[in-house]
Image (cartoon, rainbow, N blue to C red; front, side, top):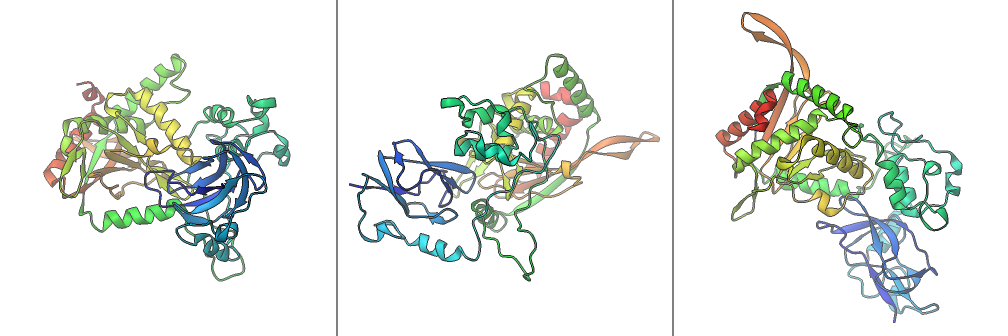
Length: 428
């Protein structure tokens, strides 16, 4: 008897998925555990795997279609086996709703989009981004090709470890690990301008999720904002000294410490002292966390995602730096696992690299707070009876007033300011 292939919930918050690509096709033999398709969830691109042995006898949902979790997308059975009823055509038999025909009807208006390759950048290339056209002749798995495209890795320069020298996922990841993941501007998802008066672009899964999360945050959550200005001269001196030391020792995972790494560490330690800010609002109670898991907002092609640095308060700066680079790289190539972007207790959003002096960030429920980090700029400040130029940073904390009162948030920011203005305070 044929087995239905359902759209599975591939992330904790997934309600529907967009079928990006079939890696198996009708007539192909499959085994349980084989990758059947790549699916765009609300957070990443995941693999939909077979749950039975046999042959892929019917593909119900075409590439580019979005269907709810639980819908039938294909059938696995014996060669020549027929599937009865509606399942043999547009919609799998017994599927919850006819989402596939609706998606098919919309196809003439908007063709399925393939994410564009990342822009050339000296910081983000391990190999030329604009790979020659003949890279398709390199033996590589479909997943490896997709990861290579997203990470800007030339497959011709990757040594394959699969059967017959085939390039597989781990080979590309090993090459991508050498990439220095600076924070580039997010790539545009808009089509090239045409003669039409406007262009309609369907919402991606992540953009749908962002819309829902913002509606669930700015509306119901009573935000208030606190801003402070921090002298970063000593933090800059400490960073320079630490990077020289890391360079002398061969580096920390191949990368230097950033100001963001130092800020994440300082935020984590400040939360240890102010547990009232390290909390979730939970309808009928407030959950105060003992562990400190920092969400780190990362700009990606079609929005942002917040990978999590767990137990940031007990990790060294070099560990935080290496983990932050790894998570940011996975986020931009849409390879984060659910456990890598869920469970944060407090978040940090940094737009300093975009020359933004100050901004307010939206709280990520159920968290009770987030800090928005601006750019570090030299400013003239009073120094006794003189005026000196010093590196200054503006930080704005968004607070959920149901959890954090004004004085509570102010006390947290005071501690954060003290730690960044005197990095030795982090050792106390």
